[in-house]
Structures are given as C-alpha cells and as structure tokens.
Image 1: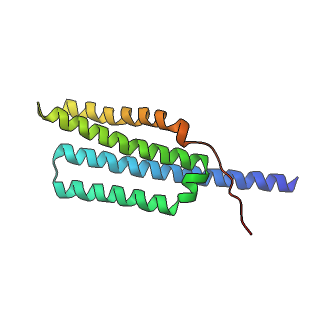
Image 2: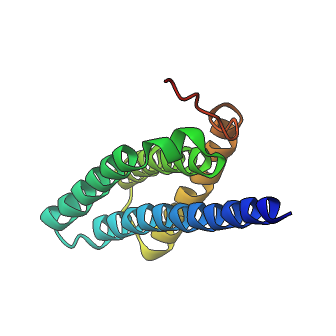
Image 3: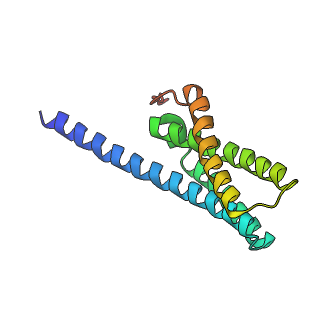
Length: 145
C-alpha cells in the first residue's frame, strides 16, 4: 500500500513540475512575441525589435536543447513544443498580413488590435492543425545496458 501511495505522490510531483515548466515556457515565449509585435507597431526602434527577436530565438533554442526529453517524451512537452511552433508560424503569418496591409494604408491603433487578435487566432488555428500529428502522448524510452 505504501509503494502505491509513494508512486502516486511521485507522479503528482512530476505532473506539477511539468505543468509549471509548460506554463513558464509558454508564457515566456508568448510574452516575448507580444513585446516584439508591439515594438514593431510603436516603432520603438529597429535595434530594440532586433534585440527582442534575438532573445526570442535564442531562448527558444536554449529551451529546446535543455528540455529536449521533456519536449519529445512527455505529453505536456509535446503540447508545449506544438504551441511554440504554432506561435512562430502565427508570428510569420501576422507579420506577412501586416506588411501587405501597410502597403496600402497606415497601421492605426484599431488595425493593430485586429492584427494582435489575428496573431492569437492564427496561433489557435495552427495549433489545432498541428496537434493531431505532433502530440502523441507519453513515450517510454528503453534503457540500454
């Protein structure tokens, strides 16, 4: 009886740790992308936007390397990687739409909010499209002796 309780306690602790890691990765990446989009809209400066973009790309690369097992073996990790890919695809789609729109008219506050909503909508739609193939559930790894 004690073994079962200990195993459930370990699983609960591991699930809480995975959930916290998933939240931190998602919120960090999402926040950096929003800051990047806002910096482009406010035209704070190309240097600032470039720094934010570099931080975004470098942090994503470092997180992928550091948590590679989490991204590939755990269900939460696969979902986190899927939403990260979806956010990058959405960012590219949004920037393309903004660029196309600004060829004919200036970007006003109202349209900036529409494109911000578009970024979130694109993220949702790309995630829903990719998740059936990218999220396959927990995988077990065989340990070779």
